[in-house]
Image (cartoon, rainbow, N blue to C red; front, side, top):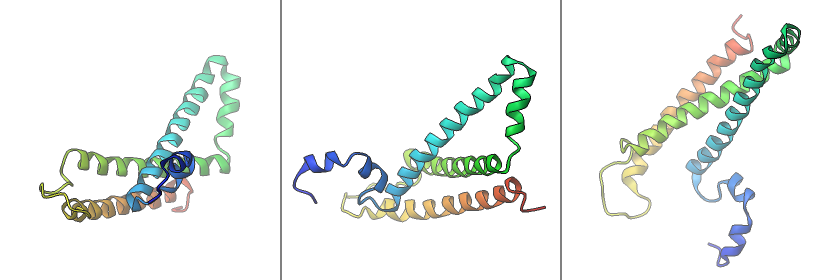
Length: 146
């Protein structure tokens, strides 16, 4: 533990990205933030492309022709990866917040075994579900299944 709190506060973005000492849950938190930002950027871009219809058929067709490039197909797949992770991790967070993955109340002694033994298996199951969704989505998005 650092004796100088001012040093820890100056870490800012570095601490935000590295998860510091919070274990796998800290990294899931970071990935949840990043995937949320990616989804927000995609939604904004989607609205812009869709609204290009207001500028006429020619503008619309030009932008839509760009969406068929292999690079954009891959980026679209990455958006799907962000969605699959964000959705499954969101389910995990909702279950924890509603108390289903917290365990019975007990004396708070680190490492909080009641919640640890319920939350870790839940995390593993939902991340496996996310991985399966990502792989299956890859077959369709990248046309590996055909």
